Length: 286
Length: 158
Image: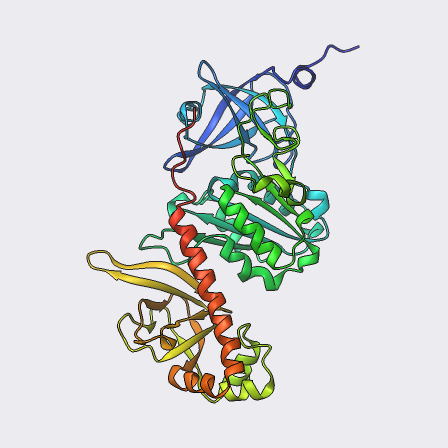
């Protein structure tokens, strides 16, 4: 019998962080970077679009960060991180050669199987594009499996739009309808101005509501209003999926910090259909 | 029917598509199709509000001129929606500018004649005003969400 490798150890002991080295760092916005992480040993931490990892800034703390790309064959991870608190500020400041701890993957992913053969609508606000990017890449990899693919992005300003280097590549494709809107344009912005839920009405005539699966990620208020727009256009609640960000800590549904009603979002989420979330999602202070 | 005729455009536009032939003909008589090149103004703040614009295609920026800062875009409007409701409200002057960001085609309906039509045919008037009110409510909702600054700097976390 072979000795359990690091992968198995990670799966058996979800609290065991693996050392990863930062191999690349790309600045996305004034407070957000994307880190490319290489495993120091030879574990292959798997992961699917929508799942998250717990990243450790050694000596500082640990935070949940979504996969912005699924791990490649060499186990390389990519995470887009915004400096919000002390841990994320530390992670954002890391440089190639620095170390982080990684455990995971945790939680549920985007239901790509359900989306196959249907129209897919991805709606992202701000940093919410990070977990949706991995879904978009997975869809584009097997583009023929899906019908109409629409991506709606909202950001505060043009310089807050994530992945601006690769966005044009997706925008040039004629098999993806990608629209970007900003709340506060600068003088060079020639695109749409307004909030992202508004864009749903623009694209609604082009998708078949009963055959549409929608993935949404962004600030809660943005998701709430996007859900209402989708409902208004006939997309059913069990085909609307939200990725919720809460205070994930243990990652395996033990500590209860991320509880929302009956759900432990680190384990039952972060991706859940609105039909299951509905009784709890709009309950204040829950 | 000519594809570039007002009646055809009215038949295709979501705002009027479900009206009957008689109503469409009535509206077509007070409408014209206009094309605006990028940066051309559809309407300007302070000018008399004499028309209602149904945007057929293109992109229009609703904006306000701020001295020292130039034109500040507030919202954009795409094909399938409408621009301008000051023609229905006294004193009928535009409150903002509307400028084409791309080549834009619009159906321009004469505001004064539209008001007269609404008086003559109250049912049609009510129906179209309800639709206009829906657009106004959508713009108000969007403006409120913009005020929230949803993607702004988050609250400090540990």
